[in-house]
Image (spheres, rainbow, N blue to C red):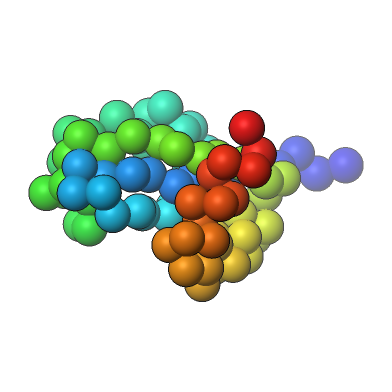
Length: 86
C-alpha cells in the first residue's frame, strides 16, 4: 500500500471579508504563512485571515479536484458549506 500524504482544502475569510480557497498539507503552517504575507499573492494585503472551513482529502489529486469544485461555488454557497459541516 502506497503511503500518501493527506491534504486539506480550506477556505479563509480575509480582512476585507473576501474568501480565499486553497490546499495544504500542514494547515496551521499555511495559515501562518498567509498571515505573514508569505502565502498567496491574493491574501498578502488582506491580512489577517481566518480559516472558516477545512476538510481533509486523502491525497493531492483529490484536494486539487475538491479545491476546483469549491472555487466554482458562489460566495453564498461557500458560506453555506462553512456552516453546514460544523
